[in-house]
Image 1 (cartoon, rainbow, N blue to C red):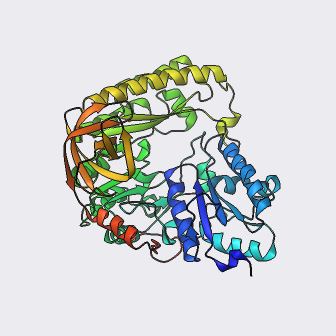
Image 2 (image 1 turned 30 degrees about the horizontal axis):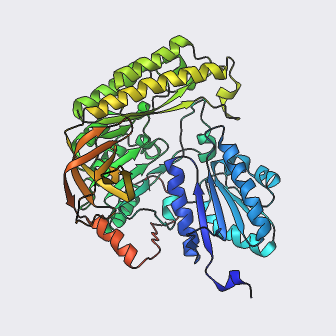
Length: 485
């Protein structure tokens, strides 16, 4: 009997891309642990390595095949090593992956995460690569067992897929049309997570505020936010990512009036030019976008608003780019995630004329980053002297010659490094309140008047360290169900 069969097999999941992929990776880990595997720690390679891929950016292919190239050497050293590839790039490339990397054991898509254990076992027995790509959703990922990284914070999917047709985006082709979960299933999952010690949840969807479109309730998302406010023990509720097209006043009111919904909003802009927005098939214009920002700030003056922006979309002129800069000046984002346009095969934008030269894109990108970062820094400086409550994450934060700090996120999701209080045992999931003493472009320091609030989440983390157990969470029945209750 080999050493591999005498011991518990180990796994590693490598995640690329968006929060939805992080959510899916927690389910993949849960599936493997349900099969008796444990997460690999230390420097030794795992027995099973899963790559959960992204296909949004052009370098996604390079990341995947770069990782697979490195894994080839491990496979030659240990033929029992199993390598699996899933996610959006697997859904797109399918059999191409095996042709380019024949040492891969299993390829599965975005719609059939649950197939992973079966594919690995079949590959082990047959000594042959297995490919299984479903063309439509077989089961909501949230119905699968989960192994979460955090004892205090969790992702909760409200829908999968997207009904939009943005010309730069390949996600709808890979994730499919929007499918909504039952509100009762979502809230049951949240309650079960809170019972486990979670105090912060983030509601996830490719177009999260379109939730309810499948069963015809335009106010379903705002109702869901308000229902989260009734769950005892749930301290923080966030959501990502909304679309300006569906961002309605009832959602703004729910954010402002529900005690545990954070005054933090990620609202993708993509471009500030009406002409480019039309070419992108983004069904809003500059005036509507800025109107949403204005109404959010009227209802929640302390709201921290972040965004996504693409520079160099085909046909973008200097005048178009100036429109983007003007929106950034007016909106005064707490942070802007900026991207140079990336041509993705299979998207309409890839075939458009007037592709922008790389040097022009880079020059505009640098100007945008300089403007956005300057505004972010100015907005952070306004917080110096204010008191913030920080949900402490794992590990230590920034250090200097005199101060050891712990890191976490404030209610508005800013990264804050807090001076560690002497003589107090601060656990991940606990809350530190402190006064902001310094602002940088990407973080705050809070070094004075530090107080500790121990939380149920910190208790859960401490218990998990004392007696580690697989955090497997099984939600509801399998399958897509609609209409919703």
